[in-house]
Length: 291
Image 1 (cartoon, rainbow, N blue to C red):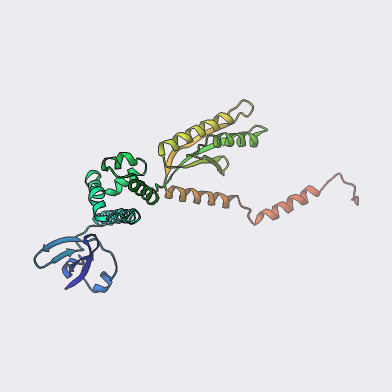
Image 2 (image 1 turned 60 degrees about the horizontal axis):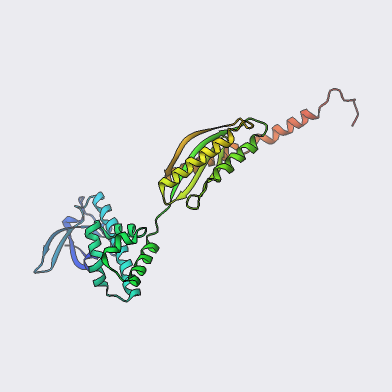
């Protein structure tokens, strides 16, 4: 007939995915199509309140809808975890907490998770209207901050730095130190060599704008240092400061690996060095037999 399921978002009420609603394709094996214990996003087709039947469909859920449902469920589960722990620690009734705090936040923000994200940085602005006692508010804010720590953003800028003066190496070191001196407590700046003359400046921060502004100052400081009259160097910005993704970092790592491999010694290096040494040892003005 189909597959019996427990609806996790509705107190584990029992429903059924009809056989015809399992897949758009021809079903050869139900065991391969749906497994016991697996979580699946489904659509409610019909509800018979008198008999208690709930008919569900798996095949009518699009990939986009499935992704949205899984994301919503994960957020709701996290909200429930936070409120359950707060109720346990503060010795309060969970249902009353949900009625007075959680459900009103759902109505106001669309999802309580979004409200909690904002409360992590502005607790009074989000929770001030509920007149919570100081103990309960402190426990709630503490749990929100512990479980909703924001992920830091990585900001990067790529530059090209050259200096052909006698003090070229020291000039570049001075420029790198000048860039790193622009670090703040929230935005520590690092400058690394990719492969001369390419360098990369990076910082980790929770504030995108502050991170980009900090790297802009670091680039300006490095440019001012390398361009001094005694150095006569130059700095060219290849990519302006921007927030980078994991994919960007993977590409950079691959590029650095390729450059490192290109700079590595090849098998012919030893033979060439031996030939050069033999050629250098020859002296046509030397006296025959002399040491």
